[in-house]
Length: 375
Image 1: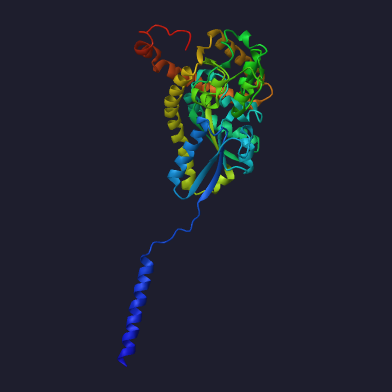
Image 2: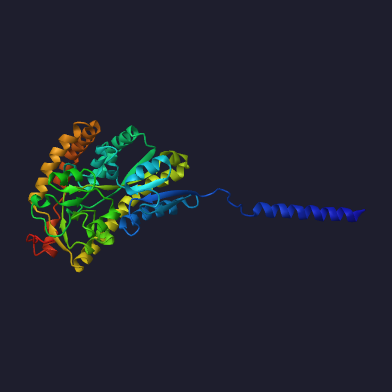
């Protein structure tokens, strides 16, 4: 009679041990990783596509297994100028591009990149966007277009060159009849100088130059221009311009998709755009300066754009601002907002910030003497 009791006792203890082991074993996660299909507006070899990957890595590293942003190059799903529609429709979950590429939807969108921005540098334009009313205006324009997107601006781009040419441009009249590539409201600025403008996306510029479809072009910076192969089709680059002196990137997501994500992931995406903005600035100074030297070694001659051309750009811009306001109330609203912020913040910056050129010239440019005309 006692043996069955012992067996029962042993079975009971064994069962308890198994149960305890099961309770102590690690639980296997059942939540699936959310994949976000994200496309850049840039060819895979462009440093801009690298910046898109940098942003994605920040999100992926912080989100862990919750989400994975998968980055595709320009044209993989949509063309560079079709990203707004692709993201709005959900064909893509997000993209990395520039607001000026949506210029065809509303001309006011080009003001987040084209023109002198009332003397604001690109970081100041970002300050206006986030603290001076620009973000709300951009959201208002997107709402009027009935697009389902949420957008952040990130990465203050250094001043873009006036362009790549067959020979140095010494006056605005040299542009008359020239077949030239640019985008946004810069189209109007170069047109005012007599150029015949073709707004090609970045990946098509060098081939068009090589085939003679265009005579000159601008894209963005030493690293991008070198990666795209400008030096293979042109040996003259004119530095400094007002056509795109305050541009920045746009990081965009489908709004419905974004709102479906956990709050933690939404915050990670938001703050990753800010971290990417700082990281871009640091990397751009490092890489652009290196590639500037490399382009010179490859035989490219750099020249400062003459002051007379810069003045002509500003004169043309004044007329463009008047003309574009006539049939687009958004254009006036954005300009008025930029002007008010630039007047206040620009005065502070001008009064407070020292001119760095004399210090650089003292140590590297000939003891404070003005640098030669050739850059």
